Length: 348
Image (cartoon, rainbow, N blue to C red):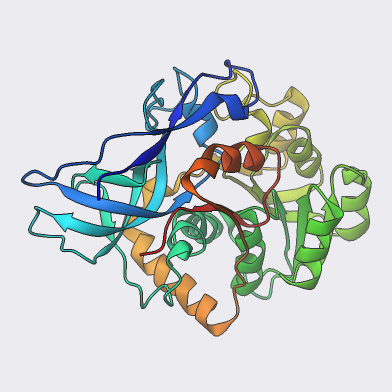
């Protein structure tokens, strides 16, 4: 084996610009030679995630995110298989996950940040490690448990924005499993609304592109809103917060509506919304799943149990081939995904 291919950052979109296909370039690159302590991994699946937009800027705006470098392979979540190892903890045939896997067919990795996967836990479906049985799933479950205060039998209303995405589609289902009485999703198409209602068990779905979100919330949430899982920020979230009950909770997970804008994270909100949060004693604390790594494995076991029992349904949008990785990310940022956006690079 002597050929290798990668996707690099060809240009930056500009601090306030939308990602474009021309920001990425696929090219041939050298095939790695394994040295002592290194692991050679064949990439199987790559993940496209909204936070990657921050890495396209020289200043990511987040201390835990480093910027992608021009003319270097982009990187992010991925799953691969070890094909050669010079490290005692990894052997040929091990399936592994990395949060910093290069967008490259074959990569040399150090053991730091490399996690062995249990195919049995995944039910043999390795891509689940990037979605329902990975960071998005843990984010949804731990966000609800740590910040959502969902209580069985309390007749609570749970609203999630970005509801057809990787995290949102899971959050609504998990809220129901955790005891929420009414689950409402906000998304961007009639197709996605239908999916939420008919396949994923949401009580209601709002299309923010065609519906008046404020009016629809008043209609379908007559007792107000008790928990809001915020994936988008901006005007949609301000509208939801205005209808939240006293003592309710915002799970501040993502703000995809402003990822193309040069604003601090979390972005500022209007004074009228700030006043509502204060007057109604609504909690709105940033949630970062990396702060709960001690609960990660326990969460994955719970998620896997629900998936295997059919209680948690998983949706994926899959593009084929390493060359499609940039396109997958651009499509994701325009709402082109249902569930988790994944690139299938190769079979084991």
